[in-house]
Image 1 (tube, helix red, strand yellow):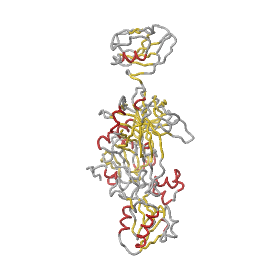
Image 2: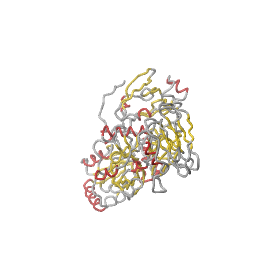
Image 3: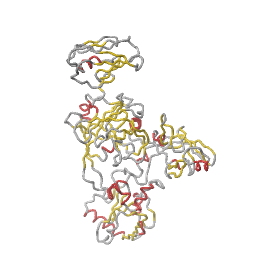
Image 4: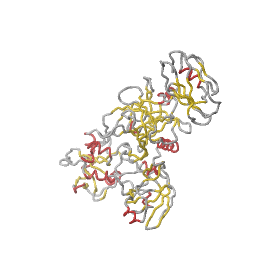
Length: 589
């Protein structure tokens, strides 16, 4: 702060903050007493031209300068807060400080410039035109002292090139993605080794806060949104904390709702509270035409879970999934029918989940992880707050066990439920590179959400055929490895004349045998079961192809359409099914 002429500051002690710690505000700049090491030089630099003396490391030392003079009104260690009110006309504004450091240092927040190359899922041997995007990232230091570069997974999805730009600098640093968590929409970046020292020079990473901010707490969001080149800061308050669907993932995780602006480009930027603790990562906003200023933040505890899993396994470790669908028991008649005062009704169990070996339909789940479940499916969260019970399992990892209390046929049982990965029938993020089979001009692919979006856009659930939308709606696998195999298109050839109108049809059987997945289809095509192969589609349509002619036509189609190979098949074992080792759990009933 500055004064037009030398004057003595008026000192007024306020309500105590903590034993042995004082706080005073100087023209809007907040300091704490006793001052930490280095505080003297900070104030001297901030009050450039106002004098050569500043507060020393002892709260009993008077401070004078041509512009101000401060004397403590209580002995060292007393409970007191200081307010320094300047007299005169200020001509220089000093920013806010806490614990001797500026509240915001843009040096740890970076711009992420990404080039994306997404597969063209209709013809998955090719790619869509490349696109570019801009997002944010920041340096983070965890409890072990390790440094990480954190951003959103959607910001670097299908990235062929990732560059980082330090604030106020023109140079760009090449980076690579070392871990992506699609469910939590988080990713970790690493600068190329030859430039790492230059990139990290002068960067002071953020530290995660240990608690979730309370309602009405003020928070700030930093990033590089559209509308400019420099870092931007917006401010708001915490409006709500609860489970929310993550747009880039399959399910719901804990999220913080704020009213600070989160615009395109803000994704991946840090969010911090009044104590300069990083409380989360900006990642999405709600813009439906009926709402305003609703942004969402990935809380620090979700970020910590993601990073801890990466440290432990060297890859994405995931979030625990309970493996069943449930119905609230908030109707009194329904509670009386099952003899329960609370809990939720297990209405459907995923056949491939460990829960299928423990639970039964019409079981009543009374508690999970030691938390009693209310009739609405919620557990106690914080003072005067409740949250959906899957929050308890989301704090664990696939393969972990969680204690459950179950009411079945009037008896209460206590078991350990093994958590799993969410493995939908129609994946949102299929394995890469995309799988396909070309056979005599027929192109077969596994059904995925990117395929549906590629063919019918964001409103695919309204425009796609029922035979393809229904599996997406149910999204439950009946057996391990089940896939929906789609006849994507038919390339024209003398053999396939009259068949090219078959497109986006579900393949049900080959030679009378049910098709389990694309790998199974490849096996069926390789097995000689006769001179003619029959392909049964939805709506009872049939395609018949002579085997020998089909093999010759396949080679001709590959040459004509510049297709590099007739097949691209996934690995024998699904990636996520091999991420956790088997463990021993209570067998249950």
